[in-house]
Image 1 (spheres, helix red, strand yellow):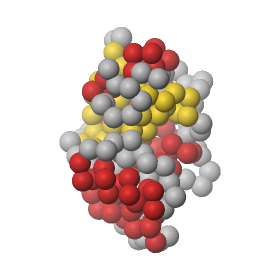
Image 2 (cartoon, helix red, strand yellow; image 1 turned 90 degrees about the horizontal axis):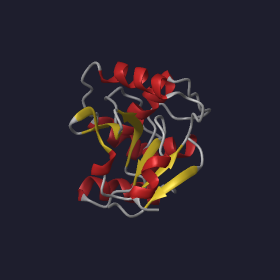
Image 3 (cartoon, one colour; image 1 turned 135 degrees about the vertical axis):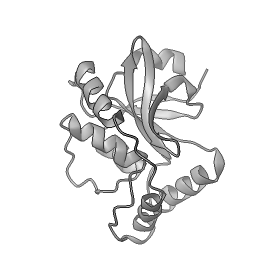
Length: 172
């Protein structure tokens, strides 16, 4: 489906799983996911409508922020873990999470990769990555998936969030 057709179907609170092929970090992430039997999601965030615009709430190297979803130029999938959540509740949870700057935890990304490749890694609190940040917002909304690792990978968030309801392959 192209982005223009998908946009009106996306709801606040939906999880966005991006499958990037750009840059060395995306390449490494995709390789680790493929080797460890996961899906090729390299990034996740949360959809949020605000003042008629659709955003992705995310954590990346620039910290935690919102940006227009239309700026995502890679294919992405949408899951709907909390189908009954209200846009107002999503706004409250996101506002709380955006109150303070959250830096990107590169150390945690390395530990997630080690865990996925070798089955174990220390659980040092080395900060959040996109998947942990997304899980934090969802948990504020009452999401409590069984068995989700405390430092989840993007594909683990997507799997725990349920079936893909929308796939966007053509961006504008």
